[in-house]
Amino acid sequence: MLEKFRHWYRILPDKKRYLEFVTALLTIPVLLTVIYTNMVSIREDKKSNTTPTPEKSEKIVIIREDENKENEKSNTPTPIPTLELSPTQSTKECKKEVGPVKISSPSEEEIVQDDLICVKIDYTVGEFCSVAWSYKLDDNKWSDYTSSPFCFSKLDPGKHELDLRVQSVASSDEVTLERTFYIKTKEAPSPTPTPLP
Image 1: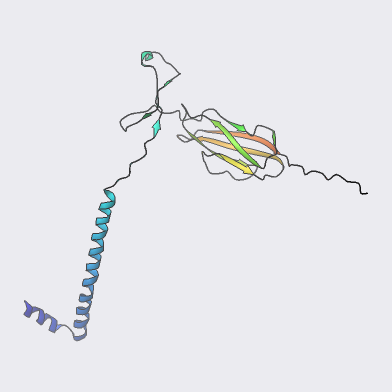
Image 2: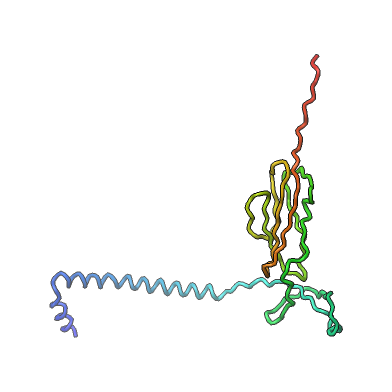
């Protein structure tokens, strides 16, 4: 076998013979390095996969109708204490429409003197699904939908119109609310003249 290799090596052209031999020798350490790094990476992945982090479980309130009144149609569900649900339990679905919602602050036609105006939205999640809202003040662009409270600061004095779109997160049902309020500037104290002696 050694004799066959020598014969093959001698019949190669002079320059090509040396170049291929050196190239073949140089690729061996590269291949060994790649194999080693892959093995180390696989070992680290196995170690990180052996310690899973526990997931947070949500607390959900289940509302059931009284079992004694199965034949009667009752619109007033009875709340049951908060339970932690396993994947096999089922819950009653919420109504996919926007429930009763209103802007409680600022009130309609209110005159505000504060620099910071926080808009308060009254919405109770119960039998209705959660909602998100988008707002715009005067002729500005609509904001992104959010369920977080929002405030305005340093508004110009005068009339301002707030538009609020409230949308169910479970459907495309939407309610639009409007509110008009006024900003009154705090008047600087007027100087009182003092007589000179």
